[in-house]
Length: 358
Image (cartoon, rainbow, N blue to C red; front, side, top):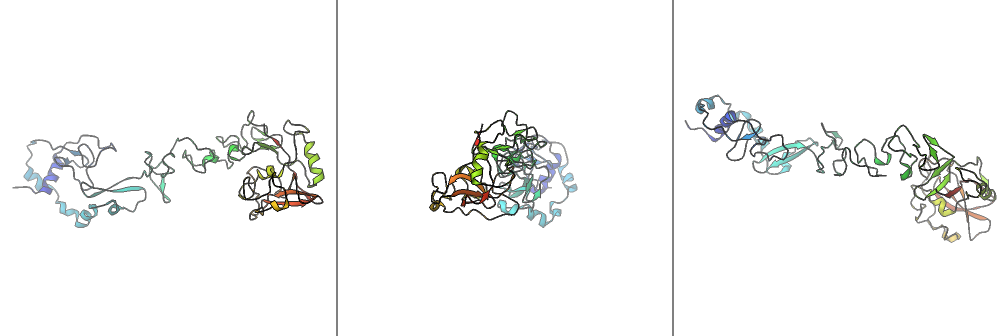
């Protein structure tokens, strides 16, 4: 008897010999040596042996008519299963799993579902939309340069090397790299906070601060940290205090009271008061009329508008810059709200001395 097209395909699947590169992801579904489509179809002249598309074995001597009688009728799959495998676009193939890339095989109109690698970097997504993906290793599947073992991007808030920590704190000890404004001089060693800074700077050694200073990589200045004075002082006391300071191997005459522009280099998180911000008070503009947009930012309990790792009170600090419009007044900066204002010498404020960095 004559066999139908569907029956012939099923017969050929039984008698075919497996061969080829079915595990090769470069294989085109349905082509010789590659995976069959989801519905068990292959390109013209090929048959599916249940896994791979191969050329049919020639003249096996098998009674095809008798064999066909023993094969299950393809209609037994049910109309719902057949319809589910048919598609005209990728949108028809959504299987509801965010971890799979759902595509429609145009040659056969059947759906294929593979592991998701949205950025094409060769690494499968570790999670998508909050769903963990089995076998996934790519922590940022929308960034092609982020994958396990990739080089970190210094000061980046992203986890480019996929080690579970943002690059700015690559060892995950909760302290950002000192070159990024943090206080971790060894950001590849979670066992240390300050890091091994001998030979790197004068303000820390091993696991702790040394000599009570903090170097600011952004400005190149070295700051007294924490402030050595245990009390607020009048302005007339502030400059002599700094001039007599001996700290970090630098003796009297090497430390001084900072200018208002230098104090502003310590501001973090309040753009108007940061260097170059909208606040008009600078070393080049010391009149009262310069105080425009200097009102700072909203007070946040328990925090200061300065770099992580800096110690001391957030209270106002004296600068060496006089208010050119008012005798007996000097510019000051409160890190509680990052406010720049003019204060009378009859009042007291904190003092933090500074010197050029090494």
